[in-house]
Structure formats: structure tokens, C-alpha cells
Image (spheres, rainbow, N blue to C red):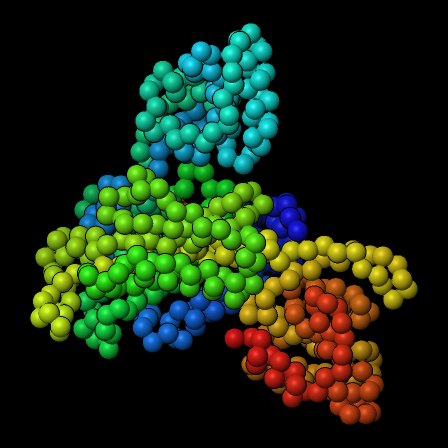
Length: 501
Ligand code: ATP
């Protein structure tokens, strides 16, 4: 099903998954807070990744490096000079846009562009842009063909072409400045002095931590090539136009891994293996294969050191967008740090008795982007019949048991029967030592099931009179099929053990 972003954002707020940051002060663009259920879901995504990537693999170790690093790190990595986006200003409205995120419909006469209609990515549909371009064409009484809507990177556009582009804010041509480079790193000052000598940056990626600590890990661990170093942590980018909810924010979490391989290793095969691993992992936490695709960056758009980058794309409500980038980076980063620090970043090869700088394959993903993908894919609205046969709407999050914020809800059939409540609380206490469980005794049982459906709880167990008077079994109600069956406590634990990992 295709859910609208409005619906998702409303559910996130209503049920306590995600709030705007600093909401009582009107919010703060590009920053978000995770509420009680959101923080559980996010932690589960992160824990699944850590368990599968680090603990369950023999060839990957984890680290946690500082968010603020020596400023020379970012000079050596190329971020101070090159971590920029092309920015255009609207001279009238003072709004700023990323030039490569503006969409244009060009009005072309005899092969020459005579006018543009522009809009921000995803705010107008291609059809609306096309219609606006038609209007422009009519207004100017221009004859000639109309170009298709294109997302055009204007970085290299000539000034007279830029002058033809109307600002998305005012609609007036000639109000956009030429694109200029805007560095996206947040700056701060470390220590009491606030001058050039104290400038430092909030990291825009976690990856550099793995490169800078490479030698420490090699010298202290039992790692042998090929091996990986992984890290989960916050990164910060001063995005010009944060948008699409938590998809593009200014503070976000990354889960990155640097997989070091021999300089003569078959990097292309290794790259393919990691792409497959990442895709399989996304399936394991419940993303549907139908929403995933691969995008191979064209050779001519790659940075000079990159040998190949493939993005795993997800079909979000606002379009197919990058979820997970898997890059073959050669030995660029380690070499840069070796040169800048004067400390060799090499490994000794027993076979050839030679030293060399390992090459690297880097899968880099944002936790928040996975979170959003998971919610988009899980959301469903269905017509169901209640006890009396009336049709009602149910909202359900079909989250994988691996990541669902609550795994099991324990419900006594009636709240005024001490024996039912006692047994339910006993089971709840036992369950919550191992699993995120929830106890709820308020309201009709059907209403309680619906509340759990809406937050994605895979199972509800109901304690009724048969439980205490007969064989101890209780009702297990399954979220997606809504089927109910009798189950013993030991079988419930076995089910959870199998499905929650
Ligand atoms: P984009 O082109 O969308 O800006 P990118 O190619 O710059 O992303 P990378 O530098 O490859 O992204 O970062 C690795 C991963 O970190 C991305 O695949 C994405 O999941 C996540 N990520 C990057 N920027 C943001 C952001 N502003 N908000 C949330 N997640 C982000």
C-alpha cells in the first residue's frame, strides 16, 4: 500500500514515534526527537545491525570514536575543501536552494532555451511543472517544442541561463544567484579562544573514525585481512534544504563499516558480496524486495578515487531515493591520512614480505532512513469486521518482530477479576526480563488489539477463565492474520526465541 507522508507524520506524532525538535518553540528545521516508541524501534534497528554486522561475524570489529575530531582529519579527508553542495540564493525572498535539487521545465524555441519553470524536488509533480511551463509558453506566445521536466544540475550553467530560471519562491526570472559552493560541515570552537586556531567540526560522517583508528585496531586486535571496522553514531550536515521528514535532516545517525582488503584482492567481487549482504539484511528486518532497487553511479560522476558506488534505493512516498550506499574507495583515505600525519598506514603481508596500504569497501547507511523506510512499508489500513459484523477501519503497522517496539502485549480478559489480573501480571513480569512487553487491562479486548496493531506489536496474549480453570493455556492473537489460537507459556517463549533475534 502507498501511504502519504502526512498520514505517517501524524501517526508518528499521535503514537509517540517522532516529534519535531523543540516543538514548543515552533520546531527547529532539520532536527527531530524520537519519542517512547520511536526510540525503541530505532534501538532495535541499530541492535539488529550491530548484532548481524559485528557480533555474528568473525571478520568485523566495532569501535566508537568521538564526534569532534582533530580538524586535520577533515583536511586530509578532503571534506574541508570539497564537502560542499551547490547553493543558489533567491535575491528577493532570501531563500536558499540546492541547485541540484531544483527541478526545471525548460521552454525551448528552435533549440534555444528562452525560459524556465522551476520547483523544488517533490513539491510539485512533473505534471504540474509541465503545465506551468505550458502557461509560460502561452503567456509569452512562444511557438516551439517544450522540453521534458528534468532535474538539472546548474553548477556549470552560464549566468545568462541562470537568469532565465524563476525563483521557486517568487516565480520571477532573474532572481536567482549563480550557484556557489557551500560547505556542509557544522563548525564550532574548541577551548576558550574563538579564533581561526580553535575551529573544529562536528563530523559529517562516522567513516573517518575507522580510518584514523585503523592502526590502533590492527595493532591491538586479532584482525587479519580481510576484516572490517564498524561504528554507529551521530553525524551532522548543515543541509541547505532538509526535507521529507527524517529522510534528510541536519543531525542523523549513521551505521558504517569499512571492510579492508588486500591491495591485489578482487575488489569488484567483494563489492558485489557486500551489496548482496546489505540487501539481504534489509529483507531480514522486513523491508519488501518490491520496494528495493539498485542504482549504479555512472563512472563519470564518481569521485576520482572511487572505483564504483552502488546505492540500494527504496521506494519512499516521495520517490525512489538512496537508502544505503556501498562504495569501493580504493586506498584513498588511509593514504591521505598517512601523508597528512606522517604515520604510515600499512599492513605487513606475510606471503610477499611486503608492506602495503589496504583497499576498502564501505557500506554506509542512515539509521533514520531505514526507520522511515520501515514505517512506509509497514503501514496499512484495512477494512475489518467487528464482533457484531460491522465493518470498521483498522490501522496496522506490519513491522518485523525483529524490530517491533513491543514484541508482545499481555491482556487480562477482565480487569476486575483478580485471578485473571494476577496471572497476566505474572506472565508479563516474566516476559519483560527478556522482551519488550506491554501490559494493558483497559477497555474492550477488541479495542486493546487495535491499539497494539497501530504500533506494530506482532502478538497479543489474552488471559481468560480457561487459563486459570483448565490447562493454563491462553489465547495468542496474531497481528497480521488476526487469527487466534490457544498456546502454552513454554510455546510462547519458543516462538519469541525463534522470531526475535
Ligand atoms: P544524499 O545524496 O542523499 O545527500 P549522500 O550520498 O551524501 O546522501 P552518504 O555521504 O553516502 O550520503 O552517507 C551515507 C548514508 O547516510 C546515506 O546513504 C544515508 O542513508 C545517510 N544520510 C546521509 N545524509 C543524510 C541526512 N542528511 N539525513 C539522514 N540520513 C543521511
